[in-house]
Image 1 (cartoon, rainbow, N blue to C red):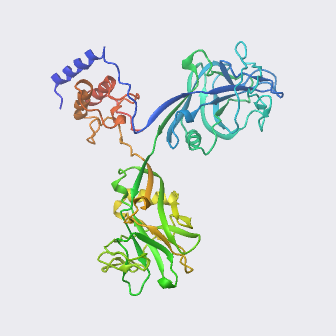
Image 2: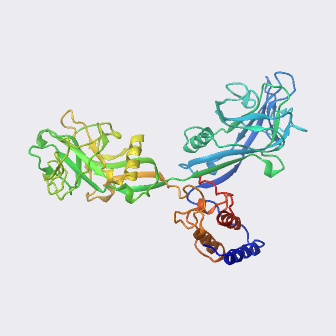
Length: 520
């Protein structure tokens, strides 16, 4: 417990240093990245049946309805941010919000909505005079009420082409900064743009268009006051990709008596043989040590398994992966020649009847596994084949990470209804290393901040005297920084391990101050 003398010594120390120590500006690290993106283009759609008006180079954007006559009174704003220039492909969007500055309001409170635009549009050289509410003659490539690019390209629907679902909304009143808050739809817009699953044409801003005289004016990206220009604020994280080699593999050879396996063989097999193999079925087994390469608590995003098929007696055949529900062994058996006939099983080998030869049986001959396939692919000629990511493949790997004791891998099943369908794949013992099985897993790191902020030293106890000592060492004595940035931002101002964090922590511990915010 801190003595009164030590408390006042610390107080004097940080108060004196407060006058000349700059606050830390270090942002969040691998946990997440925060970026602010200025608008790359914006414009206003001025209601006009001829599409005569625009304001591509103007200082302002407008939404809502003016007091002008019907047919010429509605205003809609367009804004576009070049997301791809700031956020790497493959990133995961955590949150997104759009900040605008309301510089003039014709009436009291009203809601403004963001909707995703579905057609590209232009920002020409038009520049309206005065307060800009009446627009200016549209120039080449300007967006207008009827044109996405004036004068040649029309919107499908006058007034702009956009998704009817609201991405975000905010209530506006007096002149001030306003933020369209992060919502699942807004995040989805960004995520789809980053993934390339939809085109980024920005958003349209829609005000209340039912009441005359309630138009709102925002500062545009051309406004001379830089701080007032539209800004898209995004927090994202970049997934990590790890490639794992197989931990074990084997082949189940259908045989009577049950005595065949291939634990140390260079190959494993699927499908049904021909006469040379007695028209018997082969099934491959493969497992990966997920927990050895991926930290506990991580979130699996995608899974792809790549195999080298190096011998076949058939054309295209479907090969499926099924999650195994029981553990199995890889002994020292090693088949001769092409390995299709197997070898005598050794202790702890998996066989058609045994999980571990010759003491532990499968519940069902041929392996214990889920009946529904986790993934499948068509295998034809000699080549590398991918079992592409599916929701079930991801669920399998997530389960094995969360429950390593159930990480039994997959059984590979080929075409077993007809003869001469067998396929041979390179195993982890193959002499050609580049042909070994590989599992590529994309994942997100687990959050380092759990519960309330303030566990600076990472001992699992939030905002105690040990955290205070740790923070003082960090700021004043060159001690180590906190390993978790969010924990070190106890006052949640976006800056880590600052004097303000120290003040907040002392207030929490000794002055009955407000509890820290929860982690993200």
